[in-house]
Structures are given as C-alpha cells and as structure tokens.
Length: 401
Image (tube, rainbow, N blue to C red):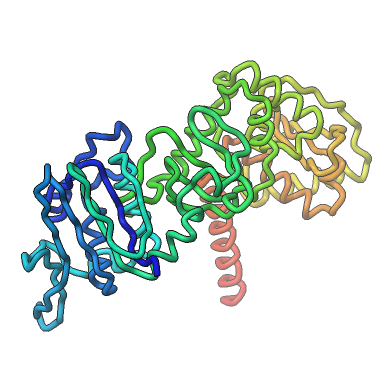
C-alpha cells in the first residue's frame, strides 16, 4: 500500500531546523507560509507520539545522512514524559508538543515547508531516495496517506476548487470551499457565516499552528481591495453576498473608486435591502438619496408620541426629528439620515412596542452607535442594567411599606 509520504526539497535541511526551537529560515520564499521555526518540531513530535515512523534523509553532495526519530520515557515530577530523540540524541521537546493537532495538520505543516522550499510531495509504497543536494522527509502512516488522498480539502490545486473571481490580492472561492480561508493555497481557517471562501495571495499574519491571526484584519484588507477594484462582477458578488454577516469591512465612501461607487449606487437603487448593509448605510449618509416624505396618520402620530414618551421615561436620549417616508423596499424598517429618523410603513405594522424598539435603535444611531459594534452592545446593556436597578429599588420600596 502507498503509505509512505515523501516531502522532497531541492535543498539540504540543516539539523538545527529540528534541534533548536524557533530556528527558521526560508531563503527560497519572499513570503513564506511558515515563519515561527516550530512547525517541523511539531510535526516530528506528533509523528513520534502516534507511532508513525518518520525519517529525514539529507544528500549533501553525495554525503548521505539519515535521521530517525524515536522517543525516550523519563519521569518528570512524578509523571511519565516522552522525550523526542533523533538518532539517540535528545531533542529539546517532548511528544506532548502539538498533541492537540489533527492528523491533517501534520500533512499541511510538512507540505507548507515543502512549498516554501519549492519542493514536491510524493506518495509511494516505499521511501524515496534523496537526490544530490536535496532532502526527503518521509512519514509512514495510513492516516497521513488518507489525508493526502483528500488533499483538496486542505491544499488547493487546479482540480480541487472553483474560483468565482480573481484579483491581485485574493481568489474568491465557491462550492465545497465556500466559507473557508486559505493562504497561498493552504487551509488556515473557516467562517461558516460567509457566502464565499478566500485564497489570500498577499502577506497575511498566521498563528503558530497556521491559522489566521485576525480574521477581521483580513476582512479589512479585502474590503479595501474591493473598494478600489474595477471588476464589476467581483464587486457585485461582494455587495450581494447572502452570508449571515458581511463578507468584509469596507472603507469610507471617499476611498471608493468610481467603478465601485457606481456599482454600489446601481445596486442600492435596485433594492437597498439586498445589498451589503454597511455600504448601503454609507450611501444613505452621503446624502445621495431623497425619499418621499409622507404625512403620518393620526393613529401613527399617537404611536410615535407614546413611543417617544416611554423612551424618555427610561432615561434614553430621543430626537424630535422623526418623519415617515415612502420606500419601495418593504423590508426596510427605518434609517437615520442627516440627523433625522426616517420611518417606513413597516415600522408601524407590528404595533407600538415594535415601533418603540425601532426608535430606540435609531436614536442610538443618532448618538453615534452603529450596528454589530461592541460599543452599541455595551450602550444597550448599560441601559438595561439601569432599568433593572430602578425596578429593583421600586420593588424594595413597595415591600418595605
């Protein structure tokens, strides 16, 4: 059976690479996937702990050196530990290193190192010999062989994924790679709320176990790239993505290029509710859109007056500038523009309590709080806490009478 996985590099691996923690150098890559100098040690420790034979063979101008990794048990403060050994030489780490890693992450680690060194990976029924001036890391493992058979889940190649759109900074992926993040073709994380997946091409910060250090930072990078793009198809896909949350974070409107601004404006005119909320909000604030003002019915005026009175009594800031507007989108409830609260027909449809909650949200927006923001969340929680406190005082007073 083909259970030998051979990671071949056209360079000779210096033994210090596995003998000293944080020893790292990738001269064959301007943007290496690995950078911490720990990945190879993790992979070796995991292989030894899971009883997968692992060897490294160096062919330094015809001088062949073979390094085999095993373990040695010791007692440490009453507990048994297994030291990693290389040709009977003790390494400065134990088999506990990387014990939380999955099988496929070992394959990804060694594959990434190989990519950084412009090497190749071969699955065979016997170890592969190292050519002159090269190294071969060989693992014998059914589990890793199974990962290699399913490599398209973790490593992108031409046969394994579908590119929806392509730009200098990233590829937009769909189908089975939707909601997954890749960096230079290597899987680095997932976000189930997203519509598309992304293969990031430019330098991106990863954690030590090759996952995204900051998803939000990447979202900002993507947003800035899209705002400057002239690819209408790409822009449209982003602005109309149906994920639970926004696909990325966009810069302010003054940083949009003309093509992005025109595309966003056209989408907004078609249906503002079906496009990215962040961009729709910025377009509203840009004063480009005027809505027909309607006269509220007597019943609606009473609803507004009652809702505002309740909100004031709770100690929440209100605003007198409230108007009713016509909107072709029945799902648009309310919005703030030019310091005024604009209510649509939908704001009145579910009764006074619903209108009250709608106005609380819009008044908060006037105060500078935005949706999906931690400051906004804290603002609301503080008001709830104060109301709970006041209610508690009232109950205590009534019980004491």
